[in-house]
Length: 105
Image 1 (cartoon, rainbow, N blue to C red):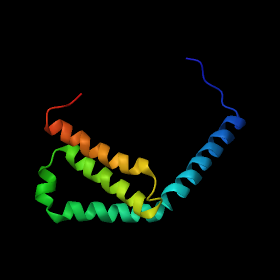
Image 2: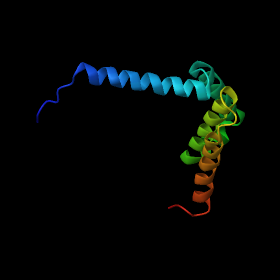
Image 3: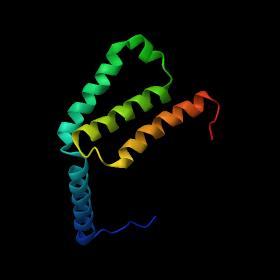
């Protein structure tokens, strides 16, 4: 197997690309630390409300609820007019509903 050589320009470009992505995300969703704190609080409320019921839910149901909480935190912490965040919430709910109705593709 031939070892791939890397050059500094590629590394610099990758760092610049990451910085650009993080700046764009920060502009859209607010500061990550603030989003993370809110997202974790929303998830904690769901999990502690009825821990036994939450634990008995299927993995896709728990994951969908957690992703919806994540999206809600992005909306509350950032741009509430970004339609894609709202579509994502509907998408996660639809995935679970489709499975419950036997419509898995």
